[in-house]
Length: 244
Image (tube, rainbow, N blue to C red; front, side, top):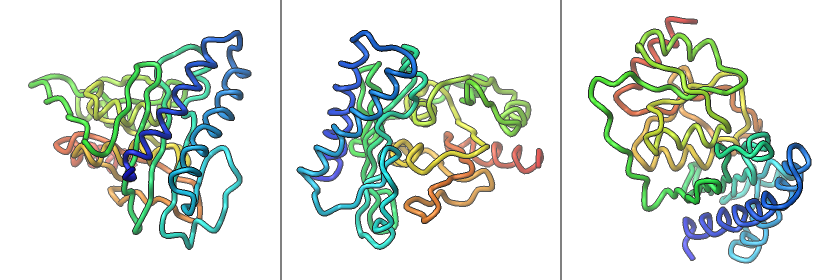
């Protein structure tokens, strides 16, 4: 299997166990904890079989610093949006990305509640923009940043609260929203796979200051990001600069 196929198989395996668990009696935090563990095991089973020599950098494992000298590193979030998963919502995801040669090289994002797997190849076909429509900007359901308010005001747009970071990122590729603006921090595994999918689809992905997003960095923290249709990139970054 090529790397994209491996990523897809790993994400699909995690999606299957997560949906099976969700059909049982557990709910809320207990379901989320069980899902995190089961999805991690499912992904590692595929990667161990298909890419046993590669490093794995996962939310659900101790950070193996050997990744910093490895040529190939899988950046994994077995269950992005644990709260949404436990609460019975649809806006959660499974992330499996390969970092190789200093870049995100292949990825899959599963949206199990919707029955979808989004890959870097073939790239997601982004629906065309609706002429004269107000831009829709995805934000956190619980912590919408002030920067997003500034962007919405500058673009005469609407804020759309959604669940996990991964879901919000691929919501741009799916045409559900036109941009995702985040401040306040996240971890690299929260966005690696969905950012790779977004990039492959031709979307703009960067920091709030316009600089590139960096993955497999020694510090797993990623302070902020923007994912948007290319034509919105400069207006969004200009609005962020003006609000600083």
